[in-house]
Image (cartoon, rainbow, N blue to C red; front, top):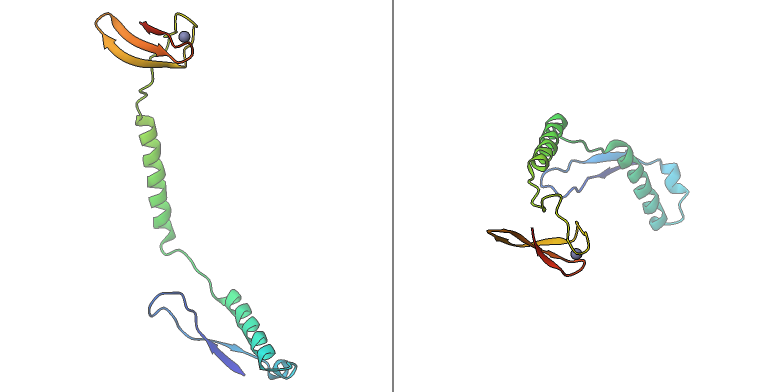
Length: 123
Ligand SMILES: [Zn+2]
């Protein structure tokens, strides 16, 4: 018995009928219609798994685009400017270097606030 089935992939016009041959002896072994239909569906699923495949259209093009995106990202990362504090500034109170916040720029130097000891100093 030939059973015709189609793939519903959500795209208009994409579907085309496929057929699976079901041995009538297998149907005779079934108790009722429900059991037979379950077997038919199982055999179609098996057929589907073996025959239906997807692949990427123009995979080389996609690979090149991905390479470009990753390359651009790398370039951007290299171009990133470090807006952090200049190295070598320490809090005169507690010697802390990491927890300093830049506050103001004055003629005689820059004012920093130390989050560690809450000290404000000019460097
Ligand atoms: Zn400090």
